[in-house]
Length: 229
Image 1 (cartoon, rainbow, N blue to C red):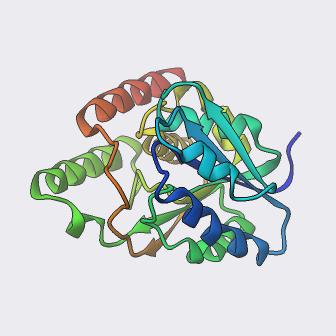
Image 2: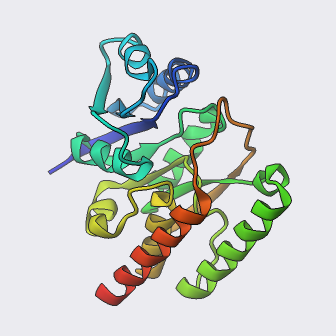
C-alpha cells in the first residue's frame, strides 16, 4: 500500500538541455508543501546526456532508465510502478509549464479531487492552424464521448491518485496520449477532476509528439476500455 505523500515524475527523452533546470525549479516548490515527496526522473532511452544530467542533480533524485525509447506513457507507467506515495504528479521536462503553480494543484487534491489538471489557457494560440483545428476536433469528440467538459485532455502537468492510474493501467496509452486516456477514463467513470488554468510556454528543444499516430492509438485504447468497463 502506498504511503501518504507525492511522487513527482519527470518523463524525459533527449532533454539534456532542460532536465536539470526542471528539477531545480521543482525541488523548492515541493519542499514548501509540507508533505512527504520524492522526485523521479524516468529517462526513456535518451540518446543524449539526459540520464547523466539527471543523476548529477543530487542524491535525492531517483533516476529510472529504459534501455531504449518505448514511449512517454510507458515512462510515466514505469514511474507510477516505482512510486512510493499515493499521489502521482507529472510534469514535462521541456520548460513549458509554470511549475511554481504546483501548490494550486496540491490544494485541489487536498480538497478531495482524484485528479487536478493544469489546463493550458493559451495552447491554441501557440498551435499552428492545422494543429489547432485537430485539437479542437479531438476535444469536441472526447466531450461527446464522456458527456463531460474536458478543458485540456493532454496537459502534461497534473496530479492524480495512484489508485486511479492503477485501475485503468492496461488501457492507458504508452505514447504521448497517456494523459488523454487517463482523463477520458477518469471522467467516464465519474471520478472527480478539477482544472486550473495556467499559461503555457514554447518548449525547449524539438517536440517528440506524433499527433496522428498517437491519436489513433489513444482512440483504440479508449474504445477498448469503454467496452471493458
